[in-house]
Image (cartoon, rainbow, N blue to C red):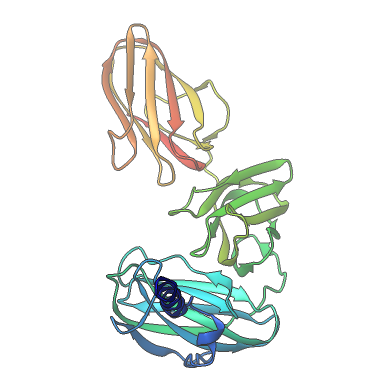
Length: 346
């Protein structure tokens, strides 16, 4: 009797385990409703949707027919807080990040490795996530290799460990290059004409941004992800603005008694200025930037003052009545990214 009971118990466990199928398994491939390219469909995750026994969340699977090497982007919108996973007969091909809040758009992009039917799973973010959604799959055109000339934007897929792109600068200026992706944590580097720079999280969230004065010439922009095997859609954009006439790139430059100078600070960088007062004066110093978090430090005689966010937002400001004398003014950058800073004296 005891032996029979054990056999029955094992059979029961096997039967229950058989219900715990992963999205994209071969058992689900045959019964998944179709997802056609360029034809959005609507769905809803409810308590009756398929259950993920790993965490109690629910999911819905769709079948997507693709040709070999076909590039595809899939977007999930709606009130559902969820994510997208793509499988090829049970093997994970690509996955999106989850929406941080209900209603966030999430997306995933990939290149098909072989013709066939792929499984697209819409996954709820946790056991209490339910709601309607809209799913759209579309064909993505491959990047044609045209360089960015002066300013412009590239949309492409990261499919290799690193991918290189060309920026051709036709006139000098201050250039801002941004690498954005919803699929992976970006890392951007620039090299050429004696310039070399790299940035991780200088943009919004985990996006990358490099700000540099560039002279005419050809530069290589390298795109990569921080994680092993990172893939997915991204955009690479370059913009140009005029270089300020009073741009300072060396330490020890004298500040005007009234007026502004500009400097470009690298991530966590610093620039030192000199301020001379021939007579006592009430002085206001501002370090203004829309790109970096500035800090001011003033030292001279027996006076030492510093400020981080005394101005607007993350701008630094010092207001002090100072005796005549010579002062050192340090402007530093708390951010990881580079950016233009205006130092204003009044």
